[in-house]
Image 1 (cartoon, rainbow, N blue to C red):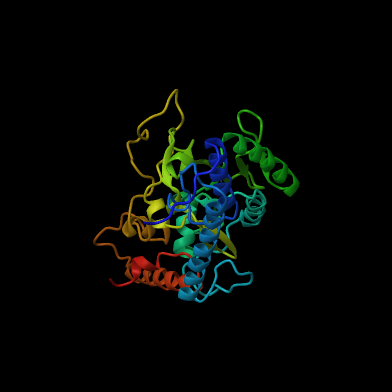
Image 2 (image 1 turned 120 degrees about the horizontal axis):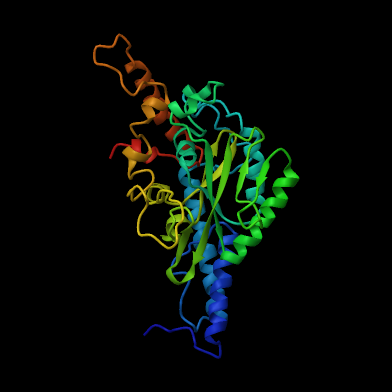
Length: 348
């Protein structure tokens, strides 16, 4: 008969606080295997058991990290890692707001909270290690809409709870004002900033909120869809990394699954809703054909949406080169230890 950890004088409240502290410790480390198997709900968690739990999580996470490093022989987060050449054939030049993005990135890192790319730019980072295809290099920003380019960068930050969120958004305001050059828009309540504009005031960085739902071992995505919804912690944590031009950015652990389940934005109304205003269930579609290589990418790298069958223009060569570049980029990022869509292009 297996031995169980002894139930001593630890109260329900004490055990709950221990579990919360452990969860928050792991979240602050931006890693850890956050599942019900490591976050025991038993109120008898004490002394030796608590120590063993932390040790096992640390050991498991260490071996997982080592295993990933051995498989890829590189770490995407390493300073000076050279991914130049991976995606140069298809990746656009750094966009006009790139220097402002670096300031926003510094703010995100200073918050000491997990965050991940949750908008279309995150998908482009996985596809091209940048903001888009070379076709978007035109200086005329009005062309971006024609090329299906985003006019913002959505980031989801995982807070402990609403109180933590409010405190951190106040911190964002202070960090933003200290950085200089950014427009630090205040929230409606006037108690912090969750949307920052670049120096030209034509591009914004939207900081969305997520909270820890400890009872479900989940991350609750709030505000975006007009209603809250849960995603399993184990799908998001530990975070993975990929390249965004010459910076390193974070994406969910199971990014294919998470991007396939992110809900579309809807303006908040008087109460929670069961679906989005346009009845879409997910924002980006699901699976490789919708995420790694959706149909609109043809327009993103310059092929007209409507090309008559008798047109004298032949875009086959352009499409073939772009597709070849996508595959090369994906496998090269993978070799450098960076998240990519390589699995979508690997023969099964």
